[in-house]
Length: 119
Image (cartoon, rainbow, N blue to C red; front, side, top):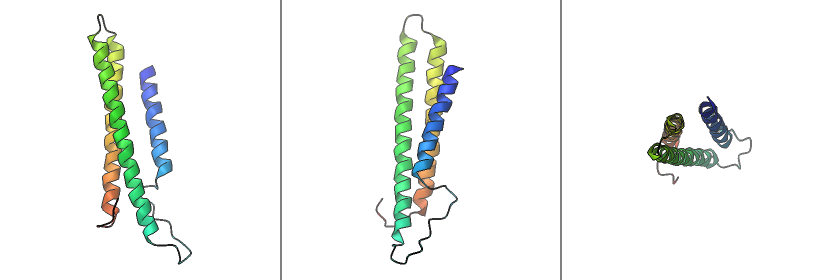
């Protein structure tokens, strides 16, 4: 049960970090009351959010890779604790799923960035 709580905690923290660094999916870009504020600002924010989601996905994939290596090393020991090995593998699987969700969000946001804009 402890590894499950750890996975839930990691995913909760990562989702909070992602949510704080980007705008919600269905929200409209902020409207600016001043006409001096460039329209590209919201496009730049969108591009920045896309980069951030991609970065988080890469971090999650790296964490998953490390947990899988740890599981493999534990499994090779004499008389391995298979419960710990399985917990590491489950954590790696959960991290990969979270990475895929983050990458899917990045792809979705990337579609909303105007063509020709450097990201």
